[in-house]
Amino acid sequence: MNSEIIASAVPHKTRHPLWRRVMSKYEFYIMLAIPMIWYVVFKYVPMYGIQIAFKDFSASRGIMASPWAGLKHFERFFESSYFWELLLNTVSLSLYSLLIGFPIPILLALLIYEIQSKWLKKWVQNVTYIPHFLSLVVIVGMLNVFLDEKTGKVNQLLALVGVDPIAFMRKAEWFQTVFVSSDVWQHMGWGSIIYLAALSGIDPTQYEAAKMDGATRLQRVLHISLPGLLPTIVIMFILQVGHLMDIGFEKVLLMQNPVNASKGEILATFVYKNGIQQGQFSYTAAAGLFNSVIDFILLIIVNTWARKKTESSLW
Image 1: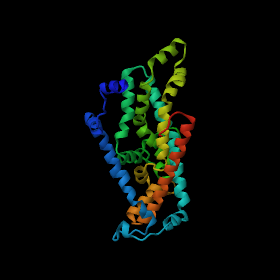
Image 2: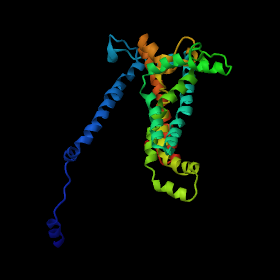
Image 3: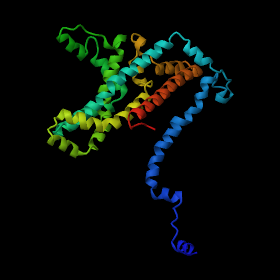
Image 4: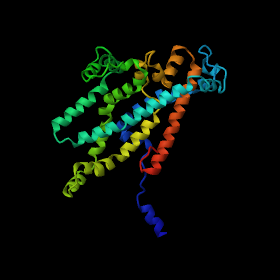
């Protein structure tokens, strides 16, 4: 009886309703709503059209009224003479970009972080950031100018050292190298920003203690900077592998010509040319869905591996 009286005397602490907690921080929820709406409209709503890959789609009938075709379009795509060429071009270009393009922003971030001079650090950052804001049309135009076989500055420099002119933009064997190298140049500065942010979060006392113990700059990078970057590196690697098959569609399309098409035709450009330009919607929807499924499987595999080997993963 006494315990009941005491319990009733203690004021009961009630929780605020959910809407009150939301309204107390409504600015953050508004900021969150903008990207959420974008994802719903441009990423989730279009998933409704996936069923086109399993139908004989007719624009006059619409998606729902078009007859089902089962796996006919997938079988046609897998049995086509160009399937393996498209797959090989896409995978090789993606792996080439990942192998070269992924570590360079990390190295650039470490380099910028180690620069002692403030004005030099700002200069390097500005010079490497600016190309990211250039249009892909401008970038490809610059490639055509600088890599021209007769008037290009690159071939003029090669001529000074006795190397014969090279038709970089008209030789299939140079397509992937030109694509990857120009892509690294354009995006390495922008990609280093997130690693610089991660480096700035490392406790400075660790570097001071290492200096007092006689550690060289390279040793500080290897034993303090890189371990501090590891969680960020793992997350960025997972995200990049998750988009491995979606490699630079616009740039590849702009760089393509009849001469380099044997190395420049990838799944994304095939879907565009045959789907948008020729109206084979169901057929190319099957090819595009295959591309997305490969990305999804790679994402699951890499995330599972990262979760087992490290403490960082997307989920």
